[in-house]
Length: 84
Image (cartoon, rainbow, N blue to C red; front, side):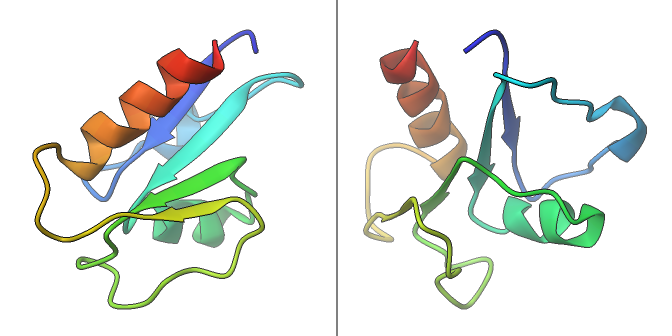
C-alpha cells in the first residue's frame, strides 16, 4: 500500500480523491455513499452503519457495535495502520 484514503460521511472533495493503483481505500460508515456516487470501489467498508441505515454489500465489510470506544473513522485509521 502506498497511500490510504479514509472516506467518512463528512464533507467530501471528489476532485482531491485520486487513488493510484496499490492505494488502499476505506469507507467508514456512510462514507460509502460518496464512493458509490463516484462509482469507486472501496477495499474495506467498516463501521456500525448507524448513519447509513443499512450494512453495505461489499466483499470486505466489517460491522462494529454501535456502542464502542472509537468512532468509525478511528476504527478505519486503526485498520489502515494494521494493513501497513
